[in-house]
Length: 324
Image (tube, rainbow, N blue to C red; front, side, top):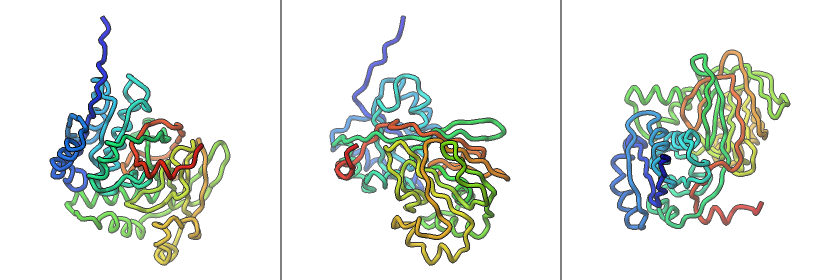
């Protein structure tokens, strides 16, 4: 006898209690009240360890949930997106995915205009406007084995990943505060060494030299509000790439504003590219991060999956989109 999955109209809420320095836990009563006040029926569950959000997502979909709210940061969102691709019940784009951001970076939400304030983010969920965004399938090496994960925002190699490693090290030592990422970034800048790398886009070699950093993105922001990929369009079927050649500190310090206002490509040593299939190899290996989570290292291959997931966005964001 074949079991029939009962499709639920309720939302499954997946909360990371340690996101945002513990705000996932301390702020959830307020978030839960706002969900009730907005007549959003839901069932909540807390993550207990790394990658637990992926397991909880697969379980939720197997149990019939087709609407998921992430209460956490970009790392929690990444785990949920990976769960959506691991499950075998339905296509990922048939699931509605919403975010109430309580993390430290919260960069994914910036592209879609999702407010930081809980009440406004939950109002967007109630209004129900959705958008089909692209996703990247990232194949990489870890412990000598080939692995694949999915990225919804930005993947970075080189300096980007080194900053995450430094940030995680500082957190493990008990350091906290909203400036910890900036501290880690500055400290990393003076210790990281560029790596010889080769970048191939859609079969054509576009770079073969020392490389400081590379970002491959669906969306525009990473690093806590840095607009590293200002030209990225989340549903155009293309990755945007930002390649940064070796730079001296004064190239950045006196142009730091351009990192946040979309002017990064006016900085010398920074170039832009686009493509669907990206291959990166290096010597020595370059570390990889996906949506702020360390994964593995080169060689790395990334492929675009067009309009792969359905995300809840604001109506203002939809109005700003050109018709395609």
